[in-house]
Length: 95
Image (cartoon, rainbow, N blue to C red):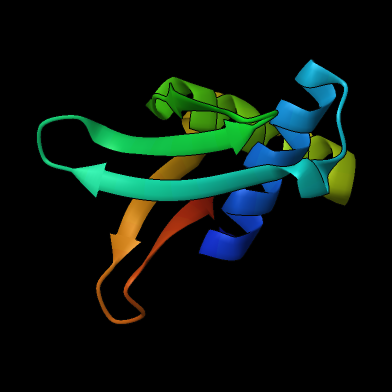
């Protein structure tokens, strides 16, 4: 299974909203990849900005897979990639 960049953003929005007790629509996410830092996200909510590291993104994806697809996925089954053809960050979920 492959999650698009939009689904990864949704996963982060849902995760942050649940943690802060706000609506997912009150969360804005910008995903990034850099050679030095790997995959990161800048998240804006409640008028504040915070940075998430790669492990936070994996946590959000695991929770999203369970809540949206009713699939128990473990960390070693998820790989974040940069798809150059589509110019976006994607998550590959392996069985």
